[in-house]
Length: 188
Image (cartoon, rainbow, N blue to C red; front, side):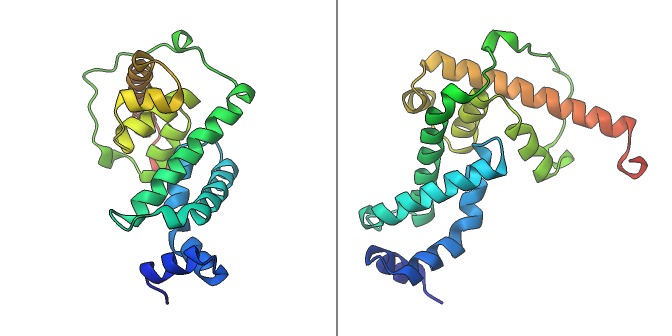
């Protein structure tokens, strides 16, 4: 089994075995990144494939400083954003003012109340713009100014979409928790 440095060196030489080893080793983690930015698994797999092509083409640019996986994650995120821009004109859009927030203050819950799949499902089903901003800000740690530049939106739009995404997530989690109380898992 090749170690990370051997894989990187082999990929720099365009060695097919090294490229396959890279794909096999990191596909699951990077697919998880892509899934957060897409509506469907098939779309996430397309983003993953495009991202790996970019990794293979640009691997010689990896300076060896910092985490290699983080370098690849950044490529996947940028590929997802490019995919978002390319497909923006084909998507059904929710106008930000058409989505009403529900005040659920006072209804606390712990993240442990939900499975990873349930949380991912809630995030995946956000309107696309909200999902992009939420992922970039809450999960990837980008600042609103950076998000605005990446998505070509106003900084205040980024902040507003993040706030509304959080509100929608809270609402969906509240509904999920309420549904569980009404219909416990053993009754379903």
